[in-house]
Length: 289
Image 1 (spheres, rainbow, N blue to C red):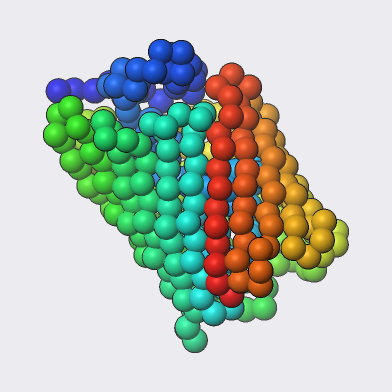
Image 2 (cartoon, helix red, strand yellow):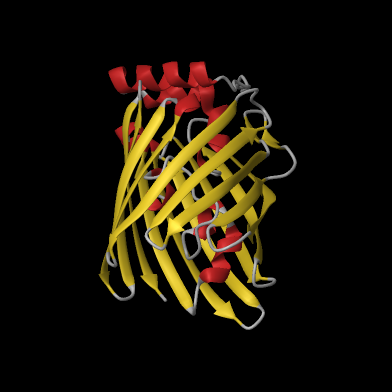
């Protein structure tokens, strides 16, 4: 059975609206499942980034596993994370990630498993990541991944591999520039699934130790539109962080909170709001040092 390749944001929006109004998950994926891979794989990480308008290329720690693996160099010893997001508050568009990382003398290695979807259609990602501090100012990272696509109605299961690479450059104590490429070449895993390259770059400005301001631009090769995203993170106190962000092109704005329960455990909660499709709640729990 052949599936149509559809890459229009407008069509995707109309399909999800139909799903929200009628609860018909099968129709959505039979018609527009080509969107699923690009929609999930490059936008995972639960509440780590959704609270800041999906900015955060310069973020260091276990969260860097999902967005820019260069930040894994910021892990002092080891760390683990579980992240969950329910897109547009729909159970069938739920994603979950489990990751862990350990620092060695030659860099930080990490493993990540991600799943998106339901019994009717689901995707998996198995990844090995690496991040390293090359100098006082430069960090570099990358990820090797195996992606799986599963269709219950046809019994089809397809797998493909790809990689990502990212870096960050600290200009001075206030400014940092970062860049990341997800799947540098287009990969077609089946008639209805294709991974497109996604390029991100951005500037982080930190006027103080408590405030981080993010301005980033993102481009997926299959789309003409460029996305400009802005995020803000503010450490109210040592154990409490508030976040907000906006993506005007996608009609998306967000808010988030992070609370350090004790020295090694942080709980994050976030909500991303689309101006048509509604709320996407997310939560992340990180543990480590």
